[in-house]
Amino acid sequence: MKPDFQAMAQAELRSYVIAHPDDVEAFETLADRAYANPYPQWHQPQDIGRFAELLEQDRATKLAESDRKSSI
Image 1: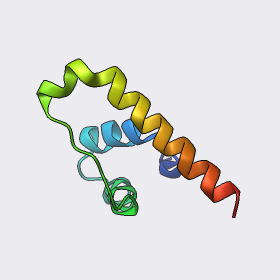
Image 2: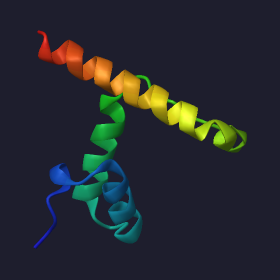
Image 3: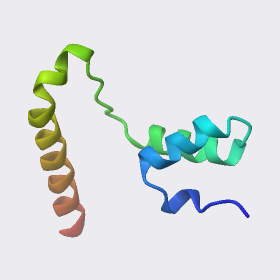
């Protein structure tokens, strides 16, 4: 019995795909999520000192998107 990929958190799904490289369905679910985000943010290793700031920016962005979607 396969796990429910849609219910998995992004990090959990990514770990599953790495552990099960032949599972095409899991990979496609992960790829679909990646393509669903048209503006991904990539950070460099030197950004680790700004981790708390970047995390807060990400949370604020997601909260604003959620609020915008719920007001429609």
